[in-house]
Length: 305
Image 1 (cartoon, rainbow, N blue to C red):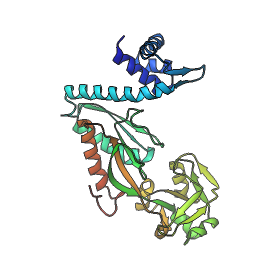
Image 2 (cartoon, helix red, strand yellow):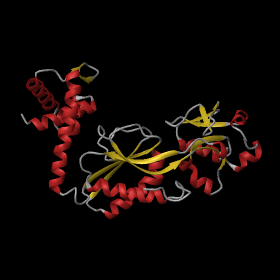
Image 3 (tube, rainbow, N blue to C red):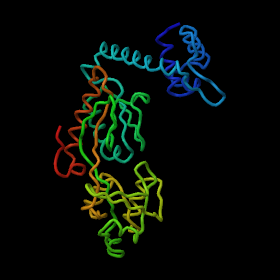
Image 4 (cartoon, rainbow, N blue to C red):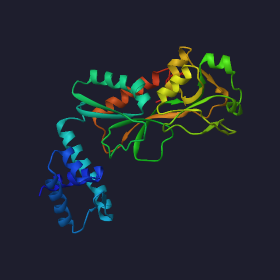
């Protein structure tokens, strides 16, 4: 049995939670997957998976073994990449993750410029409104908004964004402007049912104020909530980067700006590893430069390195 191939198959089954899906993604037959796992279990002397008609989960031994497998597979990939020259010049496929709107507006233009500079690289833009697992999902670089938990990821800070309350000039003419968070109770509220949405709107830096809003309109996307605000139906609370162009054009106006929370940081993150490939290093450098220079993200000027 090819031990390295069997470890790759084992890692893919653990990632996907399915023998059949692992086979499809690795372009091998389900029986070949089953044989590989059975061979590993025979060598190790214990079961690695608990299989039912509905799920495939790791055993306690499998949980321990998967960490070693991922480390070994990563080291082999690094060795192969070094031999192929990927540490000296950008090559291969770069996978970049970001939230949907931020990725479309700010990351995608950087990624296209990066591809123009490095014709030996292909790229995948994974735009999702959730926190991705870089290692498990095969992601090289992610752009993340918010405070980062402690982890082994390398992080480069590139800017900040604010949570802002905004509405159209016409809405404020018809309904007045809130001067304190408590005034929001008298206003129409539009909420986006996204990862950032919460019925509790927090204000202030030193002295915190929490207002529980009751939206009359719920939208499944931030785009829709923003459009409702632009049309003058009500007020919404959104991250500043999502509406910065609309505010610059005068289509939206921010309210309660003197009572906002502390801004949220923006970081470019990537797995640290022993060495960073040229494709990752080149993208991080370009993205940091472009994002720090963007005045819609950093109105006070470029963020420090």
